[in-house]
View 1 (cartoon, rainbow, N blue to C red):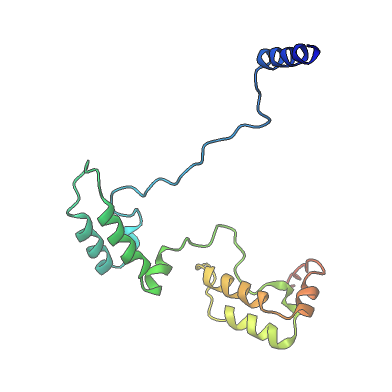
View 2 (view 1 turned 180 degrees about the vertical axis):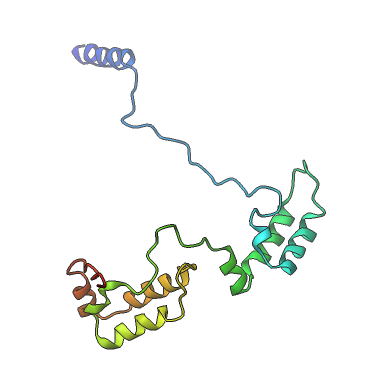
Length: 162
């Protein structure tokens, strides 16, 4: 009999206290499909590719529910862009980005210093330097561990020319 009373009391307490989860579970967010129109960067592409994309989207009418075939054809073209066209879509170097031979290459072997300098040899001051920055990053990633450790010793302040 005592067991029944204890169980009844536990049920009463459980029912009286509302359930409060420890954390809220948000519904999984799914990516929405791209909008049904030309990509916003179409004007940056070469003329022949712009024509292809415009031809694909010429059959689509505003308000149509299904544009999956146009999106698929657009993706096919964008996935197969030539390298030069892909470069035209890249963002320019951010304002204030350091463009030039990094000052800390003095800690590298002469061969690796020469390699980094050759990446920057044709760079013109004031122009975009994303390609050189990425090539420099790849070069640093491929350095031997001993040279990577030398670079980790701290910053080098470039000397001012007098």
